[in-house]
Image 1 (cartoon, rainbow, N blue to C red):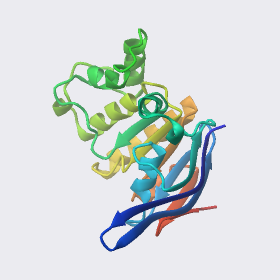
Image 2 (tube, rainbow, N blue to C red):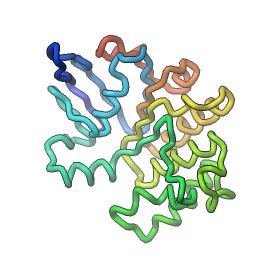
Image 3 (cartoon, rainbow, N blue to C red):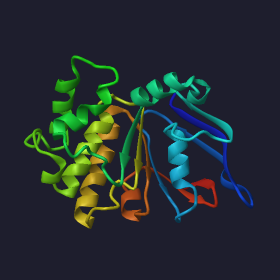
Amino acid sequence: MGLVVNQLDKEFPTRSGVLPVLSAVQLSLSPGDGLAVTGPSGSGKSTLLNILGTLETPTRGTVTVDGVNPFTLAEPDLAAFRNRHVGFVFQDHHLLPQCSVLENVLVPTLIAPDPAAEADARRLLERVGLSARLDHRPAELSGGERQRAAIARALIRKPKLLLADEPTGNLDRKTAHAIGELLSELHRQDGVMLVVVTHSQELAKLFPRRAEMNDGRLELQA
């Protein structure tokens, strides 16, 4: 099973015509695989991530996760699929400032409450080194701690696919390396498929599979 992307195209209409952003992208990942995608700005990296996360629809081609093409689902089912099977980590952590660390991690579970969610959140926060910060607000955390909380939030629903868009872009070099190692360790331990988009070659080298986006084409590196 896993993730399979087949002949994926994405085009955007503009006043001067159709703008191709992704072209014939091919990709397959198995549970526990980690892929780092690098490439220049405007090459299509974030668009690819948004499609994998079902935030945008492809123009042509297919994306399947464990045999399910989410783009064939009705909108309520698509939203439920995204909440259950996809986790997101962004460059800006997007934590809710009025909520504690523990409450932030629990946000994805509010759609489908789970009696075990709080215990799961506490275990995740211990794994990312934040067990002493459960009641702190984001403003009371360092940049690295905020991103650790965001990673815990992304994993709380036990997703099949974890997507990280420039997760270390706002961090200093030492903290960025620690966050990269944490992502690499957690996804392998949990058997989660991980796709990281980054400008950082140092971060990319932490993952066993790497690819580069050039003019909308994904070139897998040996």
